[in-house]
Amino acid sequence: MRSIQMVDLKQQYQNIKDEIDAAVLKVLESSAFINGPEVQEFAASLAQYNDVKHVIPCANGTDALQISMMALGLKPGDEVITPSFTFIATAEVIALLNLKPVFVDVDAKTFCLDPQEIEKAITPKTKAIVPVHLYGQAAPMEEIMDIARRHNLYVIEDNAQAIGGAYIYADGSKKKTGSIGTIGTTSFFPSKNLGGYGDGGAIMTNDDALANQLKMVANHGQSKRYYHDLVGCNSRLDTIQAAILNIKLRHLDSYIDARRKVADYYDAAFAGNSKITTPFRAAYSHHVFHQYTLILEGVDRDQLQQYLASKNIPSMIYYPVPAHRQQMFQQFISSNVNLPVTDWLTERVISLPIHTEMQEEQLNFIVESVLSFVNL
Ligand SMILES: *Cc1c(COP(=O)(O)O)cnc(C)c1O
Image (cartoon, rainbow, N blue to C red):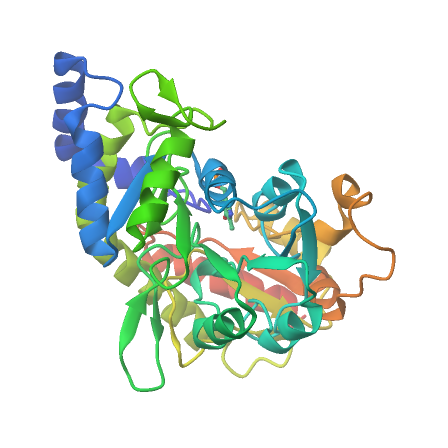
């Protein structure tokens, strides 16, 4: 049995080494390290894959969110609704741009924004909603888009954890996550479902004018070379990363299948255990299992983690402190922000290893170890 990792990037590389090495060598030989042809090639391939008109590559998923909010012309004091139960980047860029993060509770089953709570949080200053497709599960986009239409709000989908996922509409039609809102953003951080070998990110939209604005913001506010119309930033995807991502995009669907098989295996093994709730699979979501996250009841989570660690089984808490309890936000939020579901989940969730190269033997060992501790 290979040693168990949360994500086994080494083994994944070994299995596609020939393709990757050739693509990287080609970039080295061309030496077009910035904006080489692979960057536009990748943008076009990703646009086609995700069924969206424009893909603007950038330096990372955090920049993708920031550039989106800048391109939409959000102004200091504007309110942006976002979950607290997420990676910090989502809310951090809101505060960085002097916008006001308005934290809204999530649904205890889906881990994603609760539409009823969104509605309650809307004020005349609300300008945008940033749903996060957390752990690879699509947020309830049909309801979110309906709220956005009624209140004239932008929607920026944080799709960093769900690239390749889809939202399934009531009539059975499907749309890829990231292609539904005003803008979708994603990250190619190595451990993400579509990960590069360094940092990377992308922004997607179906709106032509907005795509131009996004490109300008990402490139020093430049409209033509050395003419700068607005204050932007410098955020690019390296050619080497684009070359790697071009290869990995071809494998993404099979990688998602592999992740879903791991999730199926865990689901079956933990089914019926009264202390373990396996991830809820919303009927409207094609879940891509960036994380496999359990909710524990009546289990000492720290002790379980220590027990697993003693058997060389890694596990993670995503995330141990929700955004609304982070020190960085204490100046931004009122003291009466009350997110009971977020707090409840924060104390109970645990994520188990899930990746594209897991062996049955490893899964068996993880399941046996979890159950032997939980059933003690
Ligand atoms: C990873 C992640 C980001 C940030 O991506 P980086 O590429 O690390 O900047 C943003 N939002 C969510 C939900 C993420 O998981």
